[in-house]
Image 1: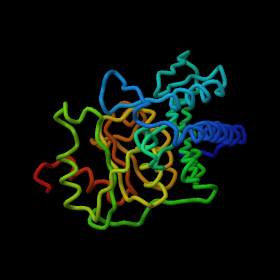
Image 2 (image 1 turned 120 degrees about the vertical axis):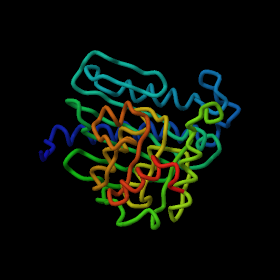
Image 3 (image 1 turned 180 degrees about the vertical axis):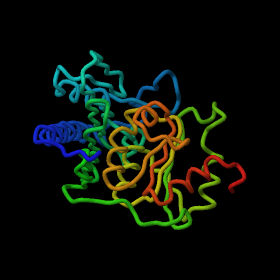
Image 4 (image 1 turned 45 degrees about the vertical axis):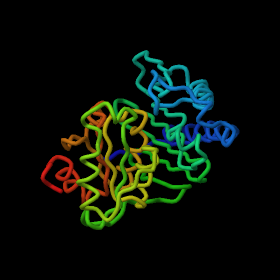
Length: 272
C-alpha cells in the first residue's frame, strides 16, 4: 500500500533534523579534545566505550523530544508509556572513530509511528553530510535525492561490515562471514559506524552491508534510508518486518539486486 506523508509528518522530519544538527554541534565542540583515555568502558568491556559527549548529546536529544512521545536511546534513555510514536536515537554512532579523530561518526535518529518507520536521519557533522528519509518520500543527502547502486552481482560489489565488541568471546563473531564475502566481493570495508554504513548503502557508495549483534539504535534510521532509496533490508533469514530488523540484531542491507546472493554467502559455509 502506498503512503504519502502529510505536512505534519514533513514538519516532524525537519524538527528531528534540527535536533540531530544540535547534537552534532555539541559533539563537534568536544571533537579533538576527548581521547580514548577519557572514555568509560560499558560493563567493563574493553572495546565498548562511552564518553561525556555521548551522554550529553543523548540528554540534549531527549530533552528536545516531545514529552508525549516514547524514547529509546543507546546510552540508557528510556521513556516507555505506550505512546504511538517512538524515537530511537543513537547520539554518537562511531564512538571509537570519534575518540581517534576519524571523522566517520554520526548522530542517528529514527521515528516509528503506528508500528512503522516514519522518518530517519543520519547526520555526520564532520563530513558535512545529512541523510534523511520520510516514508513514501524517498531518501536525500543534503537535500538531493539519492538512490542505491546498480551493482548486479556480489563480484561487482563494495561491501561493508563490522564486528561485535566482544568478538573474542563469542563463536559467531563474523570472521567466517568476512572470509566468505571478501573472497567473492570486489571489496569489503570496515568503517566503524553502522548507521553511516547503511546511509552509504542508501546513496550507492556501498552496494551492501551486513553485521551481527546490532541494536535498534544502530539500524532503525539507516533501514528507512536504504528502503526509501530503493534498496532492501532484512535479517539473515530474509524477514523484512520491523520486529525482525530491530530485534533480530543480524542485518543485511543492499541495493536489492545482490541481496539473495549475500544471504546465500552468509548462510552457506561452503560458499567460499
